[in-house]
Every structure is written in C-alpha cells, then in structure tokens.
Length: 78
Image (cartoon, rainbow, N blue to C red; front, side):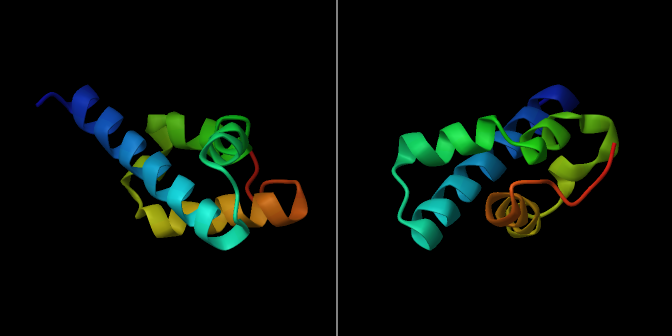
C-alpha cells in the first residue's frame, strides 16, 4: 500500500468514525452528519495531509469537529 493509499484510508476511516459519533451524540441522520462533516473546517484540515491531522485518532479529530458543531466555528487557525 502506497503512502497516498494509507493517507486516504486513514482519512476515510476517520470520517466513518466521526459520522458514527455525530449520529450517536446528536441523533443526526447519516446524510446530515456527512453533510456537516464535508462542509466543515475540520474536514478541510483533515485533508491537508502535510499537517498530519489524519494521523491522529478519530476521537481526537471528532473533538475538533464536535466543538465546531457546537459553536459554529473551528478551534484552529490556518
């Protein structure tokens, strides 16, 4: 498996787990949870592989996403 494939796998896995967490925590539908994720600043950061966020645990990344969900803004800056 190439490095790009590993990165893609870890990002996809993190998205799957964050979707599950949003559904459990906020009773969202799958579609609503995914829509929020894909439109979030957290997702944009997750896809910038040079920052290494994709290497963090899905729970850690979800904490960032959850804060963004609750407050309407991300906690990190560019």
